[in-house]
Image (cartoon, rainbow, N blue to C red; front, side, top):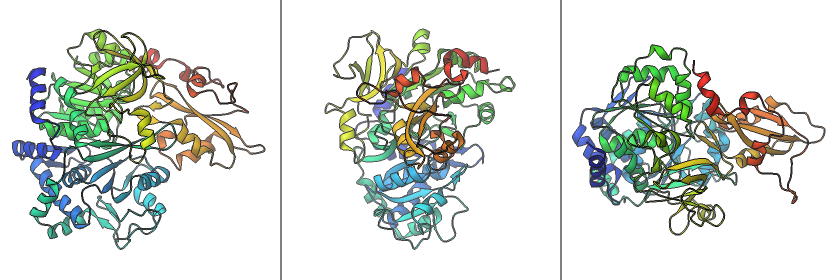
Length: 570
């Protein structure tokens, strides 16, 4: 199909009243016993027919345990078939899935449990050093016992369910929900599913905020579907084609790319639980996917592998879609030459407005290499003054604002935060600074907000600063982002110690590492006596500090990653 034919197919299939599970049922009828998902490490697979059967069964189990439309369910785990079953079962009955970051520890989990009014947790064993059962037991003592019935601190939480084989003997497992599903009839399931509307909030994804508290971006089913309107027309994929990635499916890129997009087009998904550059390259060689998804840092790591030349990428249809941070021109050129494909698409988006722009393989090469493309699908862009929000002429730099059916519906229980970024006309103000040319191509130059983008993980300084101030030996703290060859940006912490107190760099790192997600741990820690302040006594903003560091950093952090990363490859 041509791009116009693919877009016509999407528009015929997806309308503002379309529900994801209606498309899922249609695709199951077409694809039947074809493989829907394959776990690369375990070689476990599930067909489309098996996925529908498992999804319906778990949906009944959720109903049997009192989960219904509008109830909040935390899904917390690495990429797995079980994770996808949990997600689709929630959508089937209108339960709102809240997606937990696999790196979350006690601090982040406690906040989400309270802020999101979680009624049920569906989780696996954990990943790396984070064991979810230990986290939950520390927060809610006794919650892993199936007789536990909540506590005052978490008034909504009723059930903690594990979906890995080595689950707690005394606790609820996914198998318990499957067994209890027998008490729910098909008619009951159909009745509850029929009450779900495309306009219902169906998913909450958390993104940190400049106030320090994470914010839950609310998506309805139209957000899930219409985010793919533009990118699905630009990609040349057909029913039965393979897609490979190790992107975490709790992020919107992984969620849309590994679940929603394949459901629309009947694509087979092969995913890994975590990123390893050699394994990723091996999977590309063995599986011969027509599409691979990743973020900038992943492809940098693959190109830097000593054995890169040993792999054979012979699939003439290979397409690469990447996002997560600004992509250097040199990397795009390397991807095209070393992976032997000119089908590389760069996607721009945020948790609040996911795939809102992308380059297209039919774009002029100059635009592909220097811009983030044009507004995608149903999205509309404007460049405006960051203060007055007045629209600026083409060619002038200003803040990107985005409007469209796929923009989030707001932040859960945060009306004031929502009002700051989402106006009454539906424009979402991103905080990213860019210019737009006469043809609509957008060129990003920086961020108005002080967010740090470490390899696609969004980090907001205030959250870490607030936590550091809880340390008995720390008087004040400032967090900034500094350039990194590998991740685009790394975290640097400036610390003022309390008089007479002794504290080392490693102690600061361990304090954060033991309580917060590992990617929020500063790469660099510098102790100083005072911060530079404005005449009004306020600490100078992080952007100014990052441009003129208070302490001399290692040379690697001072060089432009765009200019130097290519030397690291081989």
